[in-house]
Length: 216
Image (cartoon, rainbow, N blue to C red; front, top):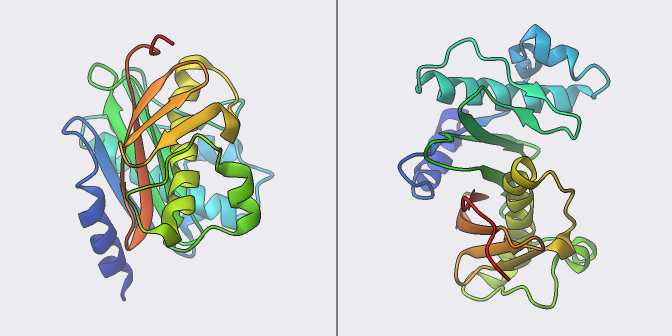
């Protein structure tokens, strides 16, 4: 499959995930994508290895194209102390990549409090990682059993990205409960998330935060 065909196939599935206020995109990571980092972005990543800078360049260029569709041009997407991307005033967003594909999501804060995205290959999750990520109360029903643990792992990554800008807390897998059957997640603080996802051609999960933590 060509690069453009791979992107088109994934984007077609991703477009089913988002509410109208969210813009999503994907880009296959290519040799030279490290050059897509703006000087200020590159300066924030001086110690990262080439492949990480290449993936970051692909993801940030993709996010800038989504922001341009919202009228924001020449936007620098910096990096916070915890490694989180820094978005222009009035916007929320999220970046992710696996070894081959970068994805991004952006929305106006007037419409979405916060969001998170994650991408993973459509392959079973190694048992040693599943043992860390899957908690007894997590619900994995309703999806392909071969991919359920990988999907849950990806969902927790997306939830963390959506929760951190709101609550400023470092969350472990044990701090996030996921119900794949209902498309819901909740953090230990009581922050409820809506989940939407696709399994093929790659696993992509979008987590959208509610405005306020749920009462417990």
